[in-house]
Amino acid sequence: MSDLLANLYPWTKSLHVVSVISWMAGLFYLPRLFVRHTESVALGTQTDQLFQDMEMKLFRVIMRPAMMSSWLFGICLVFTPGVVDWGSAWSWIKAFGVIGMTFFHFWCDKRRMDFVSGNNRLSGRQYRLMNEVPTVLMLIIVFMIIAKPF
Image (cartoon, rainbow, N blue to C red; front, side):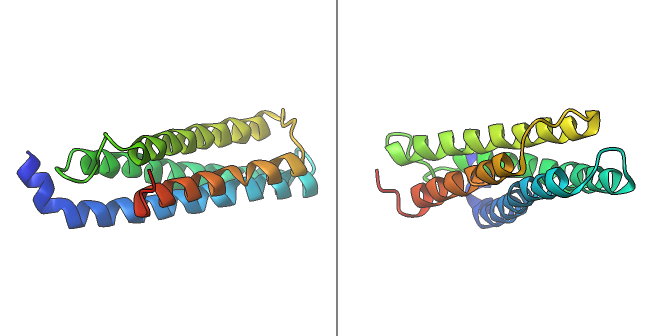
């Protein structure tokens, strides 16, 4: 199995990068939709329904499959010989960053469902602040993978 993973490494890494880019695009955009939804849209209007549809499609059609494929190809990379050094701190920091990104993903889905049920309690400012979470996690993950400082 490790020979197969080693032979497929360039393809697996490419598919992982494409998946992560797609996932990150959604993680950056969905909270921005929440900001506009919170600040500019009245509940129960056609625009409210339009925002809910856009948020649902972004989450289900782009973000969820992208997260799943990011994890799938990432796990394949973890099991590819010589790719991850679990004796170094960078690999653990990166792993915790990915877990944090996954929690943020599900937090976004919970917020999306709050809009659907009419129970959104967060302000546009709070969504703006939360929109920084994936940026910080992305920086940690990228620096750990590329620079491997620890």
